Length: 274
Image (cartoon, rainbow, N blue to C red):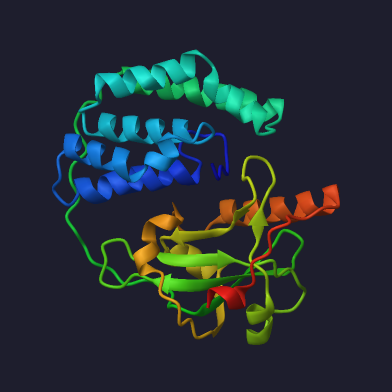
């Protein structure tokens, strides 16, 4: 699921499906055709009992934004919310009651929106090609809540694209001094296993933003990355610009490991990815 909050859109699957929808919509495709393509592309998610709701939520919201919400999709979402099946999943994945309460409120508000009439369909955006802020192989650092430096490696950058995403691998670096090039090479990828993350490597496509770049992330070096990831665009989740939510998620994993005295069994080294 890869949730970072209780809001309907605060998970990787929703962001992936919704972003995929509007990439196609802005490219001139029709809502019905896009919906059919997404159901095929994301079939594994649709068949995943713990993640399928996020697919239907994203598809319903995208269709609603275009004033073309399908009655069957709307009925599917109503059933999910009104039967409480989404809440059951959150409880099964270990969410506390405070989070469950917030999720219930978010679900009710979301259904209210879908049942209302959108004043005007979302306009298709004219394509504006941009270049990514960071480059492939860039070693990036940021400050964690304990004042230490955390680190991330950029594995890929999409050039000549309307959405210049970069593929980011968050590391387990957590130290008082800025990591060196060798420390990045020797680092492990951060594996998320707290809350509903499910033992997931923290690797995702990120849309850089200059405002966040200058205030939160700093480039300290660059590694040669010989592996190619562009063909694997849909194997990873998507995220907006790096902000405090990302750091909170990383801090959350470190706190979980410290408080529980355990760490994920899966280990991935940065050197394996480059």
